[in-house]
Length: 303
Image 1 (cartoon, rainbow, N blue to C red):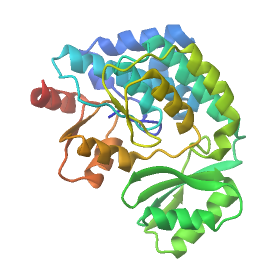
Image 2: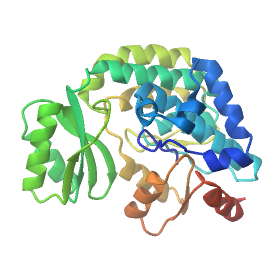
Image 3: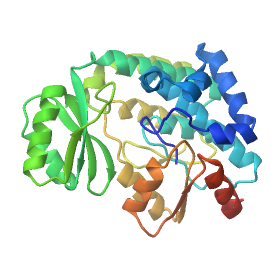
């Protein structure tokens, strides 16, 4: 599993980089590709610089691919399936052999720029709703005038909504009235995975064509419909759709379980997806390799 935006933090992979040169090598490649010293920003901050979408996305992809390199070099087995949350889908595709790393860094840097430019800051918003089922959240959004919809189905009782700022605030109020345990606005740079991203679609299509996506060596469970895909056309279609469609992460994890998966490894900074997977299905064995202790434990268990 490859995490998406929100998993980043200043100092990520610091302990891993000391012992594993793959981190420095990948970040050097990324810097050459887009002319930004992502490792300096990831290591030293400031936090708002790392949080800029056009920086966050290539930084997280680079971190995840470096961890994949370490996993494979350390004897970690090839997984039966890969999946990534939003941006993480691009990381998954690099590791599955469908995207060249340098091309992917350029692609997600461009994707981040397009997402930032699609909606002027302050005009859109996202909010997390905890403690309501999906239908209740969807119903609350439907009752609001303006653009607002579910953006991330992260786990049972955890849905993120996105849209016009005023509409999101109204939907938050309705969710609270329905008994949501929490309904809070998120500190994000744009309203991702909703109809407001539509202005970026044509430009992203051009960037995807230029990236020369190929077939996957490892099947992907894609965000938009939890389908298992292997062809370049299926990948292209899914990446374009997920820009303005919700991330169906609960369904993705469920699909992996249906395919016989019993163990998940989070390949990226932090433990966001590890926590979500445990909420989705407590029978799963779940771990992460974003820090030295987890990396050692997972290699010992899965090499």
